[in-house]
Image (cartoon, rainbow, N blue to C red; front, side, top):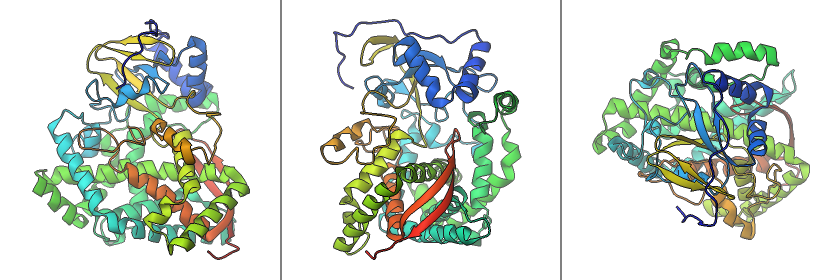
Length: 474
């Protein structure tokens, strides 16, 4: 943490939690139905003239026992969320509530554990070592999955409807890739999972994350949706059969990974449940939202951006003799485009933590006293970047690459590295690599494309309207 600036005045934290029970419900109605996610925060920043303020976060009553948070919406105060000596993250992955451990075989997965818990370091070490061991097969496996994905999109476009569902197609590609990566290139179709992998995972995830979701219905209908999704949690038994199929598939196919976990001292059953959580919740859940976000913003960038990306990608691939790691590093616009997508809209927009002790945090303008046990919440800073709501594909090119320290999607700075002692996503670098590879494979095949999309709280639904085949060889 940087030292505090003594010149900034100590101020009381503005904002209000409202009347108990009714205040949190009013706030979540604003968040989901009246204002929407971005406007919810923007109006409060303006109202309180502060990027630090008190508010409530969904789901609220009756699912969340305490929806109260102190929002940290600037790059000066936000980093306290990554200082594990000052904050804890026990059971805070989903924010102000935690699904029942019955969803996870009775275990608390590593993602819900605090860094002070002994099993956290052990399990995360296992994850980091496992991912590192897959370095040589990662790229070819993913490129094969993408080949099947683009073939599927083309088949859908050639069909009677003349359009393609991007989300469902990329979801299948992601699941098959993850299963093969974890399970020594085994085909999920040869296990209990069969071809239903994405559906099984989405069913399991949907039951857990329903309190954070909305279909963006009209306001009156929204109140009914709110009662259905945020009054009582969906019990784990409703998705027990889906999870059982996932468990049986991974437990049989991921023997090498589970053997290594046992060697490190992790119980085989616990390791399997953690592997499923990493693959299904962290990886599939994150990537099946992040890729639609990626294709949305690049699609909105239009033909000129597509032309620039295609030229860079094809030129570098030709010069390097293929899609190598060196080639990917030399694609400066492609790298910047991926980082810009992760900056402007990420599948993981929020971070939560609780203060381990009384402490003082500072925004750009003032100091604030935080009491031990208070919940802290953070999201992107609107002040750091020029035109922060605009998508600028070359934002991180050249000297501006230094701004990557303010890209915070991974539960840490983009310039930091995941370790067993922190809460940063162990697959952070692989997520960035996959997004780059996706753009490379896209623009090696196509000159441009067009889309439609529908925004949802947990990521957009994207429809591909057209794919224009590459007009020049690379």
